[in-house]
Every structure is written in structure tokens, then in C-alpha cells.
Image (cartoon, rainbow, N blue to C red; front, side, top):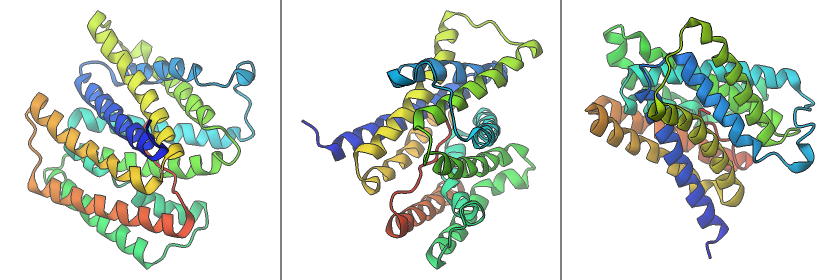
Length: 293
């Protein structure tokens, strides 16, 4: 029989695997319109969350005390999702994943303005280290005027706000409702793009597109379960396995080999995130995790 910490460790590992597979499928689906992929991500997320809604909330699941905060979270989350999907289609997988680890850096900065939190020297030093890491990773893109390097940065900015808003929402709203509203929002946003041209997928592609939504939904659930069951300090470092998966998938499928600059920049970003994470645990307890949904 597994202990709670062991179960939490297992759920985190499964969550990282599911997110990595979702990233892989998004990159693979670059021949389909982005709006169509967004629709599949949202619609099958809704189908998934239907099974986790408490029975006593089936008829009134949509009731919320904070509609405008949900709206801003969904709009910013949609912008972040569009950005990360665009980045995955146009940049090496390991590069996108490396920059995405920078979300805690911007969350720290945003917490000053939105939550009136005080940030000490250690976290400011970590923010500086993280920025240096981002500059090292993206320098090849900036030097060759590759505009796509801006999209993972937009993603981490968006997800940093999302992390703050989830932290605010979770004080009064259940986690499943926060995720359900977001899945519904991106489903509608994807559906609006239908007149601009969708491609009819064959059966295999239909299954794979559907898996984007399934893995995104189940990954978020497993992530929540992991933090619920185990010590946050034990399971969070497992998130960085995503870089290993990105390097392996990128090499085996697309022949991508990450540069030394990318790996060194990723090391700085990960180090920065760990410092911020550890300081938040010491000062406030477990921080709110952020990951693209």
C-alpha cells in the first residue's frame, strides 16, 4: 500500500507525462488550424471534468461568486494557451519547455502588484537569475529576428497572472469549477474559428486531436491530486522531468538537438524557480502551481 507522499509522487509523475504528451500532440498537429486544436483541447476537457463535478452540484455547477475574476482568468489563460501552442509549432520542443519554467519568476513580480506581497532579496536575486536564463535561451532567436521566441515569454506572463488569479479564486471557488470555466471558454473560442477553415481529420487524427483535450484535463487533475496528497517540496522538482521528455521527444521525432545555450539557460531558469519555490514554502507555505492547461 502506497503512502500519501508516494501517491503524490506518482500523481506528479503521471501529470508531467500527460503534459509532455499533450505538448507533443500539439506540435504534431501543426497542419491543422490553431483554432481547431484549441477547440479539441477545450471540448474534451469539458467532457473530462463532467465526471469530477460533485453530484450535488450537477444542476447548479455554474454558480459562482466571482464571475469577473473568472472572466479575466479565462481571457488571459486563452491568450497564454494560444501563445504556447504557437510556440510549440514553431520552436524546438526543449526550448519552449525551458522558457515555460520561468512562470514562477513573473508570478513573484505580479504578486507584488496583485497580492501586495513583499519580495525579499533572495527572491529578487532568483528573478534576476531567471531573466538571465531567458535571455540566454532566446538570444539566438533575437539575433536572427525570429519572432516566435516572444510567444513562450507571453505564455509565462499569462500563466503568472493565471497563477495569481487561481490563488484568489481558490479561496471561494472549487478547483474543478475554475478549470471547467476555462475549458468552456477555450471551447467557445475555438468554435468561433470554424468559418475561417477547419480540416476534416481522418479517424486516427480525430483520436489524436481528442487526446490533446484528454491529456490536458487529466494532467491538471493529477497535478491537483499530487499537491493534495503529498508534501509540495517532495513532488515539485519532478516537474522538471518535462525538459528531459522534451529533449527525447524532440530528438526522436523531429531530430531536434538543444544547443548548449538552451541547456545552460534552462539550468538558470530551473535554479531560479527552485529558489523562489523554496522561499515561498519557508515564508508562506505551499505556493500555487502554474502550468499551461
